[in-house]
Image 1 (cartoon, rainbow, N blue to C red):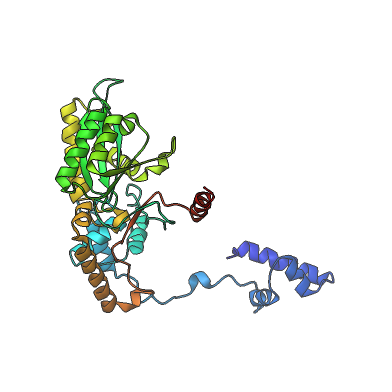
Image 2 (cartoon, rainbow, N blue to C red):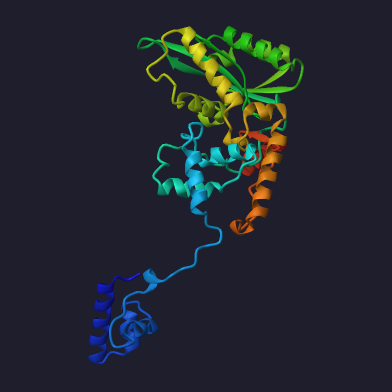
Length: 355
């Protein structure tokens, strides 16, 4: 949209060029203005201002009413939702058979009210290429790693051993110790296999190349339990992304003691609370915003089915607000660990054929 002073100046230049012998179309072309546009500007003997800002436009049928907008603001201000993005709020409301507005509408309202800055925006996972390990049920593929937690003094750290199930993202086993030790890792694996009641079942255990993961005693235990070990490439942290991601989630929790834990007992108590929150309360974006416990036990199928029905009913009530189909609440059928690119897979097959 051209400002009125610029419009008047453009008309003056075109008219001056035209008086000096230039064709009107050529003069307009020099300023990238259509002849019809120029004629509309000067019709009536004077340069007209742009009337678009003054035009009366009909209110869109799918626009939220003021009451509905205020309802959205009341919900996002509630204590349970005050720090959550709409991508977390909308599924929680759907679980209660409530639908008010879409995620994009909530984001727009929050931006207009300047209430979005402190809220994280969860993103949907990107599509995966062919995988090296594929989990279609719980307890098929586990990933584990060790992270360091600050202690009470500089240079003192506690070690958090943590195992997650690839399919459900559930923390199936964890311990906090004062040092890295293969015996601690072996005890944790043994306890986790017992607690999950999968002794003798086929299982892949993925980790990085740390010394506890490669220790002979640890490898012997895996062989006895019938567990297939898998390792990241050296110096490639992206090969164990799920463990790295949960450690980031852990250390970015608002209540995480960034100054360190006062004792080993305090570190264990805090981790206990985190594991409970992550397992039973956290609606994980990568598994369609259900909790890891719901996914691990299969309850997520009914939860997502209910959300789908809520959205179908919402669309039937106000069809003018839905330009496309409702949100896809279908449960994810599988999760890939370190998907292999098609070229890499082809090269690997060719190499095997040569051998």
